[in-house]
Image (cartoon, rainbow, N blue to C red; front, side):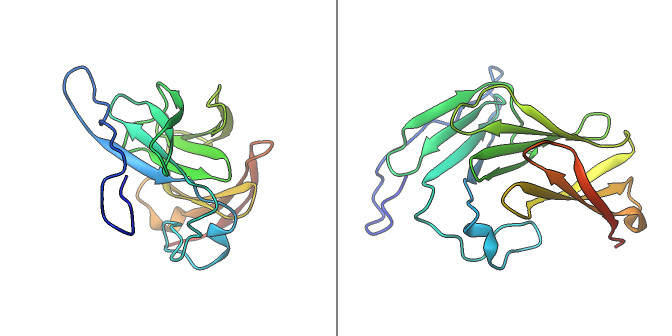
Length: 176
């Protein structure tokens, strides 16, 4: 963790690796509703996030662990094993960690960042032909997915997922 004013290292954490010595890591800042109310890239990353509202980030390690870390002091707040690989589709948003894992299609699970308890199954693709192209937030309690069947860009759909109750709210064609 760097001091943005001086560039000095304020704290440092080791990258959790697999027992075989493989390493890898992904880091996701916890976005808030204020972060996603303005313009964003096509991947859902805000161009101008509000930087002083939630000071946490989530580190996904090569050992499949998810660690919630306070960015101000580097303190580990919560940790859970067997959550995601660094290459999985992940979003940390509004107190939740959303993880999309490809298995017989894909499944979207949600974790409460304050407890990192058992995940809620929020959505499962209709069948194993469906693949997730993009996962992004689109409201306080809604995630949006671009979903396609195989590599056919004509089959792409925009799917809204209810983060409170789970399940598909609606699906609209979004070819190409």
